[in-house]
Length: 286
Ligand SMILES: [Zn+2]
Ligand SMILES: [Zn+2]
Image 1: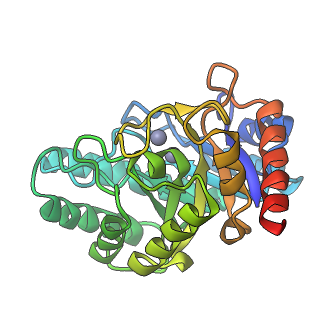
Image 2: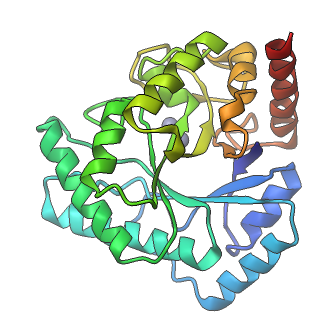
């Protein structure tokens, strides 16, 4: 398990690697541009080369790029879809250039419209973005299910992957906070087992390529996306110990997005996760 942290690329793409190393991360996640603006950051070959060099020095072995929040591939507004396509394609090309594990994408929102049609629109945009980039994987993230967001269930994630053409580059990212908020009780070994079985039926666990590790301020099935620092939410220390010791997550980047220092992830947060993983493993063995 590559336990890691979402980090800032401020001051240069390669700086994100340095920040990850500082807190003891084995994987990192970055935004490839300001997450609330459409305008892409113009990185050049030098930035990419320096990033790859920094990465090669170790010990970080997983790199996720989070697509911009504004992206809504499912929008019924053609202009928004066009902008979303451009932004997602840009993220995938940056992913190609830095050798990222994958780009993580919120699949989009139906905004009160017909869900099936929204999934079809999203699928079309995603397929185009894949065609316009070379090899970087795209991980569709499950969502908390607020306000028409797509990806609240494994059925929807499966339908999205089908609608996008089912390419081998398509995978999924599961977020522990979103799972709980969308009604999957993952706080016990039995609950997490049942959840992953359902995931396997509807999508296939071979598509599971990354994990977001967040605690949740909002309750089971609340459909509200409110992250908490590890151990300070509804999942709690025990729930996180179960999640972190899941054998099927063994080879994946498991990235924390919300830490205890004003949401920033600290070395103590990282250490806590390692401790909880060990505790969970002992409980499973015992
Ligand atoms: Zn997430
Ligand atoms: Zn979230």
